[in-house]
Length: 148
Image 1 (cartoon, rainbow, N blue to C red):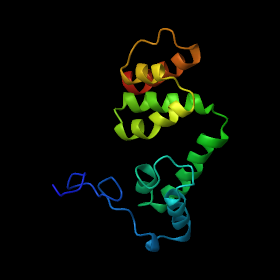
Image 2 (tube, rainbow, N blue to C red):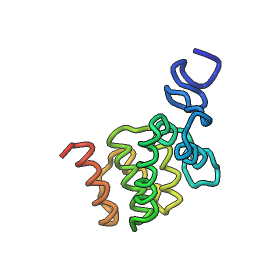
Image 3 (cartoon, one colour):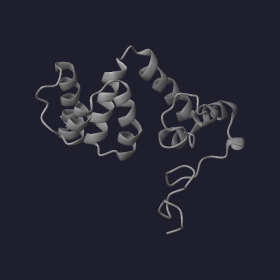
Image 4 (cartoon, one colour):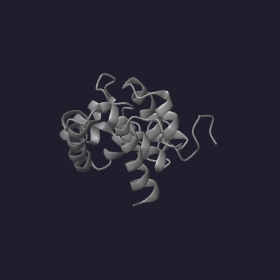
């Protein structure tokens, strides 16, 4: 183990096992996506950490997933509050620490109650939640937890 806060197999700049791609080695499309994720004002939750940086290892994947991601998050008409509940339910059922950490604060900012976050976190019963919240969480549990 080095003196960094990461295990030896984790790159300290990317936060995952692969180093970030060299920006200068990317084509124009991938460079624009890199710049978007690197910009603190872009609205991304974690910048080049996580999926944003990983996708840049395949610039064509980054190009296509970026437009899908933008559409789902900002243009599809999905209530941001319910979107964050769905993301947390999915992260919990898949035990995705990265997604949970990236979205817990955002969920609270989108008026998801701490009680709802804790129900998802601890897989507690859905009693007392608004019907739509319970439905979204139940769907996430069934699809990703029960796999049905």
